[in-house]
Length: 294
Image (cartoon, rainbow, N blue to C red; front, side, top):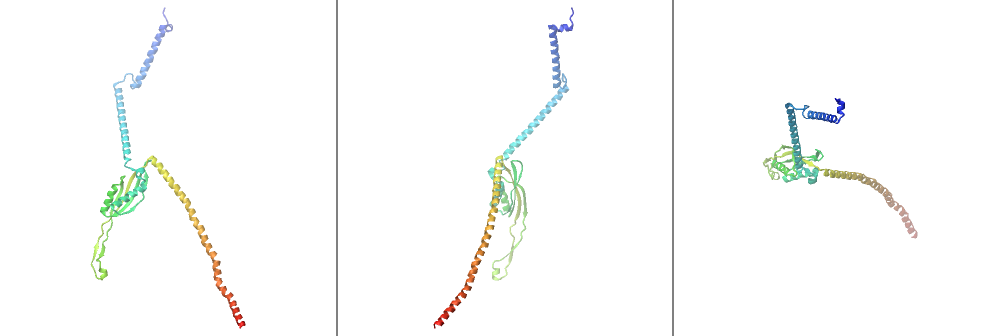
């Protein structure tokens, strides 16, 4: 007797056959899906697909190498920055450049025995949260050799100062007439000689330092600035009180003193004028009594 498909799949052998067919279909679908995503959409990749994949791998490798080089360059830059911090002006180590930078230039001029004519104030400008510029202008007027010695002394300063601008100009010289000594005293005519002073040079320049302020130094600097501001405010508040005190007390004392002394002076001045008027009758009475007694 022949069985229908429905009757066959209801038997254990039919159920096993149905399970095997379902498993084969699932594996087939899974293999097709994986191959399509991994090999460019084909079950069996061709040589062109493989070449395209190789080119993508090569491109990604090149990009990775470039990124690694850039990362290494950033690391080298960070190392150089950390190393250069030791050569910058450190406020904790070298003091505040607003005052110490002026002292360095002044000391360099004294060691070179150069005439430091003007010395400006230090100007600062921020670079980032830790670094800032500090610039200082100066003018030296002296002979050429002293100017050169001054340059050499500035180069010896620690931390090292950078030159922003230097101008060297020749100063005009004028001949000076010198008369022989003793000519004016003897009245004789003496020959006069002209002497030319040494050639002077006017040097104007600007030096710069890079100031490094760590995070801890910025807080200390802020606290110092706050204390200075509060001290200035206290001094400004106390000054008006001290200045008004003499203004209120001094005029009163000076104005009251003459007023108190004027009546006494009038009484003293009037007293000698009244005395003769009182003594004259007494003298007349005494004379009359003497005449009567006679």
